[in-house]
Length: 342
Image (cartoon, rainbow, N blue to C red; front, side):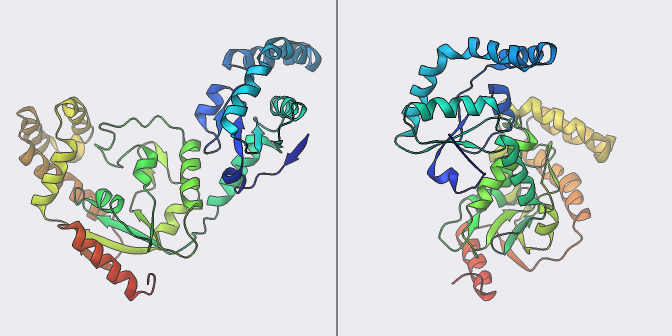
């Protein structure tokens, strides 16, 4: 049985098998890894308690009793998923769980490797990637007032001149007071970092990486390492949109009856910042489902003020998002002028 140190190239050549418990896997895992637990959540607790109270020999014996009958099924599941690829197996820190499964695969003739140091070694790699963060190409940060359409514009960009990373999509949050409507930010900080690492590692060397301007936190998730500071020194694009267009786009995104209760709760959370009179006015619009004045007052009385207050920088270029096709042309011309794209 052979061990190997973590190398991101392994993700593109091997079937990666996570033999930890479902709870461990849910908290975070190597991107693309298949979860085939050797022990379930309760069994791992049982083995851990037994190890602490009676020592490693008793724990290993009990572990064999719990898992031996599952070995054929484990091998069968891995074989079906591998489709001829070599196999990389890992557990928490390269211990008995991954050693057991790798040994069984090796004994039955499969090309299997155990990840040295397990998930812990992978996690150290992720932390090192973001501390300090060194982008593969120039960062182009898209800023603009709420409702301008930045996210839709970025996600609609086509062509091979740049690489797009959707921070809000990865974080499952739109990064604002109303940002969780229709979404569920249940992922852990560690898993967000894994998803972000996986997206950034795939960026072609030297090509501009386009991201939406965010604060340090996106809902309950934080940008890792010094990524936020590096983004702050990137190329800044200011995205304009008229108040009328912004209101229309927000109504399309948020104006759904099933969001009504969540919108009221989000509005209440910013009551102090709005002030009592303004809160009552906007609340009444929402209660009557008058979405145009509701969105307009929310933008003018809250979002725009917050954005301008936290904007200590000057943009490198301004583009209009009234028409996405024309906006993309503007962006391309600017990047060509900077010799960042051909």
